[in-house]
Length: 396
Image 1 (cartoon, rainbow, N blue to C red):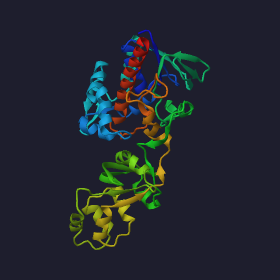
Image 2: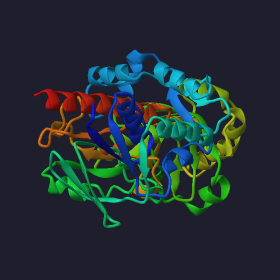
Image 3: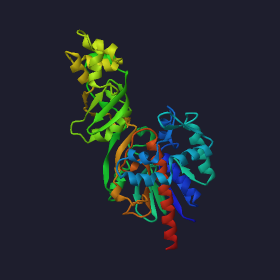
């Protein structure tokens, strides 16, 4: 096509956009603030890269906030979980589905996939320009890009894929809000998502249970609930159910959760197991209810005088929170460019030729492969949309 496009950000959304733009015949230059691309991608893959999820598409789309499930259904159709797995396989990286539905790379390592992906992009003609932190965009077309190192560049179209504000050492620092606001764009404040929440434990609870899990529990926040496992930490609690309930917790004036320690049992069943117990009620419950160290520590400090009150407490352990952990520690962020600023094909309405992808947009999802999936899907959409825009501009 002869047109040029700049991709700003070397995470999965940006790399995917660069890949698709190159395949569609554009001259692609990819800029990143760090010495190499994919740094957050590599950090996420340290424990085994959870690439996507095998959940049915009908419920997959319900995991996302910010827009309706029908909208997310359309986003996922552009580059589905199945297509993402085939894409990884084409790079020589097979995947497998865990019992949880999470899809992992078979070798549980992100580095080989990233290395092969970068080689593929270079072979397709994508130019990589590292240590280029974007400071400002002068609207176009052509757009003028101003970088911290003093260089400038012009581009017929731009895809921004700069991530949120978690793990800032990887380059995902959220500073892009400054120049987007200068462009007259509305941004929802960035907030920590998929993160721990802070609670001041009694010293005896920490002594007995710090670093120990609460397994097979159900957690309720507002009118939402999530099952799984939490970890009791010196600062509060951490774990999947909290990640899934983060949106609800942030909406509360006084955030708190209720934990059902024995969701498979009714109060009556728990009380029946305590028949004849008269003294040391919590210690008896530890044996008869098969409580973990952390669960026992929570109940032991509740001063319940009898089995009935202890059973009620076990089904409704209320934990108030001071707030979430700092955004730099979060796995991902909520907030970002408001959807009203974008067309359905992810172009900025006020500045045609400027597109966004990935975590810069105001959406969130729990862990489990959902985050990476939408980064790949939106990167794909932004690339197709940019190609369409440049074609129409050339022909118009």
